[in-house]
Structure formats: structure tokens, C-alpha cells
Image 1 (tube, rainbow, N blue to C red):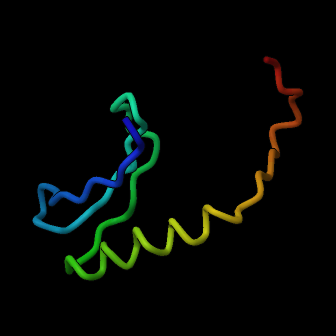
Image 2 (cartoon, helix red, strand yellow; image 1 turned 60 degrees about the horizontal axis):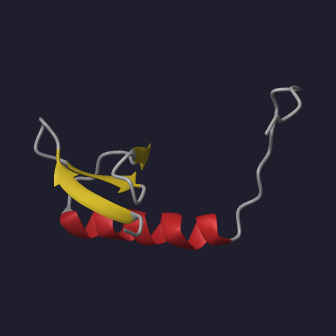
Length: 65
């Protein structure tokens, strides 16, 4: 199963999104939006930005496999 963006309403009735991995695990969540079109624009912005994003590791720790 492929990853997917899930749009939902929160307890305040505002729109949010979360990115779920293929196994159903939530790997990212977005801020709240007042409108559905706003949250859809937010998802689109994340898709565009993530496609070319670099990783900036500021932990100072070496990665282990």
C-alpha cells in the first residue's frame, strides 16, 4: 500500500492533514486550516517542497544502520 495524505477535522472543527506510510503509521501532521481549500493547498505545498528537500542533521551524531 502506498503512502497517503489524510484530511480530517479536529476537535475545534478545523481542517488538518496527516501523512500516513504504507503500513498506516502516521509520519507527519500539518497545522490547522480554517477552510478545506486551505488544507488542500497545504498538502500540495508539502508535496512540492518535500520532493526537493535536503536533510539538515543538526544532532551531531553519526547515523547507524
